[in-house]
Length: 177
Image (tube, rainbow, N blue to C red; front, side, top):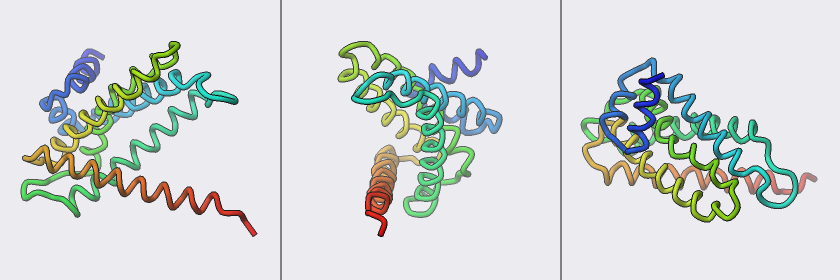
């Protein structure tokens, strides 16, 4: 438990050494899973009662967060090793899963959105924090020497994800005849 806590604190501090440690430790996959799960629970708590209609169940948001984590890691792995590799790039999917899992650590603080008026501050702050952690995770897991390349990959991954979401949304929104 102490190792997990040290790693979470290091990920929150954007410490590249922690992401390197997690990358190498195949046993840290379950720890990364737990970090993503707790971040998803935080998001679920933060969204409780927000908006009109019924609040989304915390469990559904946490499960969705896990699905997005695995999908995002697979996309980043594929693009990072095929579309934007550096000469030093050497990674497997597990390494990317673990580092991106720990990059979700700031999402735990999304639970504070539930307190009146805090959403406008907490959501952008945690989102930017998670993006910064994701860039460090990408740089370390894909053995990039350039932070710029990690940012480029994150943006490319986001564009691909956004494009797929648009297509899926368009297909699902079409009336069935």
